[in-house]
Amino acid sequence: MSAPADAATLDDLRRLLAPAIADAAVFDGWTAQAVEQAAAATGTDPALAAFAFRDGPMAMVSAWIDHVDATMTQDVGGEALSNMKIRERIRRLVWARLDAVAGREEALTRALSIMAMPQNLAASTKLGWRSADAMWRLAGDTATDYNHYTKRAILGGIYAATLHVFARDKTEGKAETSAFLDRRIDGIMRFEKAKAQLLRTPDERFSMSRLLGRLRYPAR
Image (cartoon, rainbow, N blue to C red; front, side):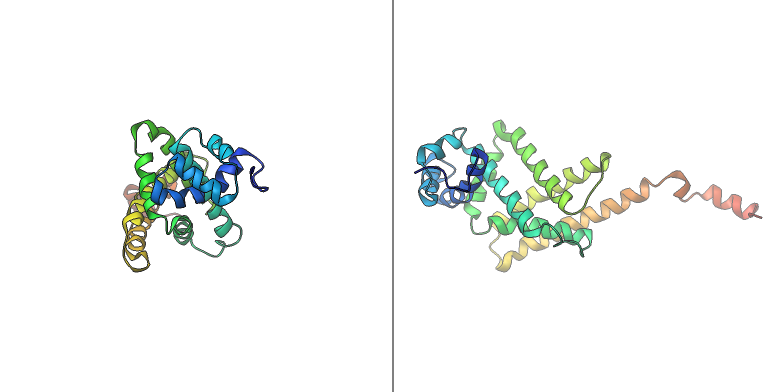
């Protein structure tokens, strides 16, 4: 056996194997055994699969996140968001990611534990940033100033918190997760609105002295 035909590079192979590894991780954890199970399930040379994930559990989790990114883009990219308001776009994008991991909550819980390990925090932060950036770009964000960074930092934090809720949510239709996400997105929208008002140009801000001056010396 070798690599499947649609895996032209090691990165392709990692993304291809990632969901099968996640399936196996429900029982075996993010381990070499999970990689071996995924190789068997996909018809991949087990030695090649082991080589692709020679860096261990964090490499497996990273590949799974790559797979989720790609699935989100495929499912919600293009014109799918064009007629939605920004809060609806963000919600749809986050939920597309949750749909991509649904049914693998145990694997998700184990992945979150791996990402929280001190030696993995830097890599986890980069992965979270990348996912938040992908969501904002698909949502149509074109900010290049500090807003670019604040939006991604806030969304990354909300998405991470939502993943933790999703992983343990036993309610019908993930109702708890849905309500949690809606509250957090409402918070984003309130923050963005308040920030926009605070950072308007001086000529646009309300000024009591300017108002009194106009009352005293009306324009002619």
